[in-house]
Structures are given as structure tokens and as C-alpha cells.
Length: 145
Image (cartoon, rainbow, N blue to C red; front, side):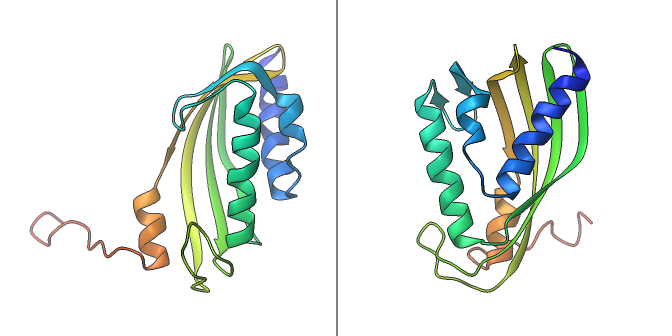
């Protein structure tokens, strides 16, 4: 697959998630898929991914993922995304806060023959929970700023 084709595959995933259409996962994940961040492996990852995103959609019905940067090299694609949503439903046991959140993620995908075989992702979950008011994080002390 060309670098541009791999980028198209990545973009199609985020477009499908924005439409809350998770059927594409069946087509995109290779049978030996490994998610190093979430420790998901194989075809069971499809079901876990589906359950995870369903939970996100329930808590944040207007969930949207925007591709900010995308770089392809060899069989890998690096993506920086911004996720936004309004917390109007229960999420991981948290009652709705009505707060709008923004979450940043950097993900590295490995694609072979048009299918995802590996992913590593970094999410700014500390800021996410701060925005929801679950934790109080004041940042660096004044003497460091």
C-alpha cells in the first residue's frame, strides 16, 4: 500500500467513528491486531473497541475526532487528533456534568495490506478528567513558570 493509501485508511476510521459507525472495524483490524496501549489482541479487540466507543458515545453524544496532523512512513502512520464532546450522559460511572471537553491524542498505527496490525496511543487523560471536574490539577508551581 502506498503512503497516501495508508493515510486514507486512517482518515476513514476517524470519519466512521464520527458517524458512530463502528462496522468498519470488522474490515480494518487484522486477525493478529495488537493495541499496545490498551493491551487488546486479535479479533477480540474489535468487540472491545466497539464497547469502548459505545461508552464514549453514550457519555458524549456529540463526540467528534479531528485529524490535526498525519505523517506516513513505510508501513506506519502517525496521527495527532483532537477529540471534542459534551458530557451529557453517564461515562465510566460519572454522572453527566454538561461540560465540553477537548482531548488530544497521538497515535502510531502500523498498516499491512490495508489492515491495522498495531497501534500505540498516548492520550492526555489527566487534562480530560480535569476538564470534567473529577480531579483538581493546578499545574506547575509559580516558581517553575
